[in-house]
Length: 435
Image 1 (cartoon, rainbow, N blue to C red):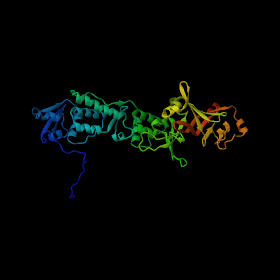
Image 2 (image 1 turned 90 degrees about the vertical axis):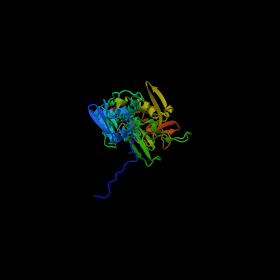
Image 3 (image 1 turned 30 degrees about the vertical axis):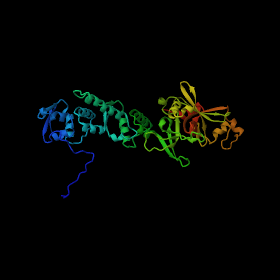
Image 4 (image 1 turned 135 degrees about the vertical axis):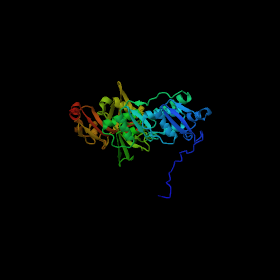
């Protein structure tokens, strides 16, 4: 056997001194329901002043048996706490009842422990024990559960301590009528699991749950997006994200107020720590979740008389665009298509990848139609112009990627990639399929 005794390190935050409120070597009797507990003055003094030390400090009571009409199973946890044992609470009902009794008995050290303890969540009648570190000091705080716990702590302090009622009020843990399976997936994501999200529909449901519980950081982490290292961009990194996933707090307009220079809009996902600003490319998809998003239209309009391509964005996509870019959406050109708005942008097209009617178009196809060659600055041959009849040509875009370019608060869009159709026949031929 080693001659050197085993040393145990004790945190400096632990206070091992116990005031001698009651004689440390005297044993006191407490009857709780049908069980009798015997505790030393040392144990009772370890969390004092309290209901117990006040009772036994009176000369008339020092040899009496204190009777408490409370649950002996809950009191056993209080008994263990007074003896110096750490508590392991695994039941949401036990947590609530222990908190109420800690208030009733005035056990402040126990209250402090419970406030710092893990959070219990009852979702769909399934109990979860969640480390508070997953919530506190992150972009997920405050949230549904921390607000609920703050109410539990402070409201009952008012009822029990201030008003001095005879016994704690009956209280049940709050139950959230949501999917426990989805909540379990959220906890897995909070703990760092990377393989939780199964598909886009599952991702959509998880994002909906994040919004309900106000897990703002987690929502931004799981939003579908793509980060691109672009060696040809002066901003190096670009982020591709759907319009409906853009949060107004993340939109960054670095355009100088003198309007002398056009600057691409940037995006910095909010609520994430150390998130850099990246050049923004946003997606418009008129085919995604039509049962949820309803009907929206993105229409590319080419006017051969004006020589300027424009895009019309209507209905819920327009409403969402006004929300996402609310800081400067007042400068958008709009027209009302009752009961929904329509936003109109002039657009740049250089370098855009275009697939029309299922076929990839050449780079300058738009300028062939509207009668202006952007590179050469000259009219295209008359033969090419005659191939398209009429002065106004419209294309319905199903999916498209865009940059928004700012000059002060004035915005235009630049097409990065588009997919669309000229008429119903082409749309049905390419998009319609059996269930």
